[in-house]
Image (cartoon, rainbow, N blue to C red; front, side, top):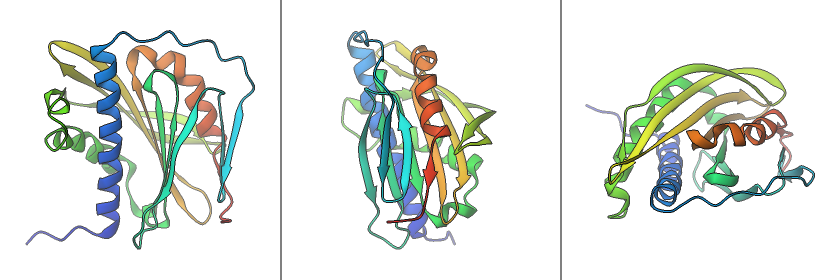
Length: 208
């Protein structure tokens, strides 16, 4: 008899579904309209700090969500959005300590296609190709961190848009964080410095 989903599993599923909807909206915009040229970022970096979490990001990037799940997991989710629909999602909860980053990445890949079925009629036309995975190493919270890189293609009306997603897990003293980044492959090089800055400067003090 299958086990009922735990509150953490349900909350994580909601977080990954939300990330799918954001990715779908970004893909639609890139597939159906010409991309705007982004200006060079010359302003100083910005520091985001709230309720014990802090990190730096380039000027022009913006935190669009910082919320806490109203259940026993108290899963905190922060979205940082950059140019060309680049996004960093930060999830914080002590319950994430036992979560395998490989399993989390695999579940996210599975949810991409499944979430399309319950999305808008236009989003349902999106087709998600299979993901290819590979290990990746980056600095997260000031330390070298081994994570998972995924590549997949979003297709619609004969157009294809390759994407890259990355997943990392970090113990931050008092909580555990799962960090996800995603961007269309053609913009990966342009946004890499922004991703690296946010991940490397991530800190958690535990103060609220």
